[in-house]
Image (tube, rainbow, N blue to C red; front, side, top):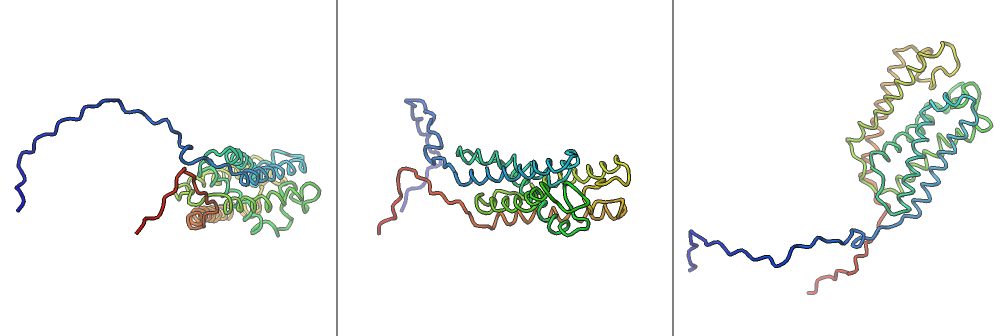
Amino acid sequence: MTAPIPRDIPDLPAIPRTHALLSSSVPASAVVPPVRRRLAAAFRLLLAGTAAAGVILALLANGDPLRTLSHFSLQSNALLALVALASARRAWSARAPLPSALTGAALLYITITGLVYHLLLADTAPPFSVTDTTTAPTGWAWPANLLLHTVTPAAAVLDWLLLTPPARLRLRQAVTWMLYPTAYLLFSLLRAQLITPGTPARYLYPFLDAEAHGFRHTLANALLLGLAFYALAVLLVALDHVRPNPIRHRAKTGFRLQPPVG
């Protein structure tokens, strides 16, 4: 038999404190040392240079820089150049990566640039170009067109797949990413209203040409594109959570756990 539990348990005496608790001054890097990612830094520096070169060549090939910079493809490449440059600096200095909301937005916009060009604009008549709307790209316009719509988008996707840790993008960020394409649509339509009808390049993209297709048809195209862009954003988030991790580092903590014996 066991003794019955007493109803009143006496309070235990307090343990006197002989010294104050000392705050730890050991940095986190002493436990898990930072890793300088030289390959990622070099590739992102090259990516930033490629995006910037496309923008510069497009400006050199056209005498109207304001019209050239008004294109979505120029703006997405310029944003990617800045983000890639900052990411390269952080990778080289072993600092924390940029917020996923920013890098995901840059990835989405440059992917939109590549897909829209190759699916909707590559075979249009007259040939589409950010520098000239009447003839096929020639001179500086040809490498600019190649860099802006093909090389840079492909390189950005490779950076995401091969050099970026997975599961960083969030579904709630997709709604925020759509603010810029929506604002660009409003800017493009407002810009056209401020230009005299019949002026070349009044509408920057043929599927937004309300003068040729009518305002209702243009809004329908914009709605379909907006839904497609949001679906693409959701797809990028989903793929980011199922793709394998291309970066695997074993942290050196100074000791090694041994398997249990017996």
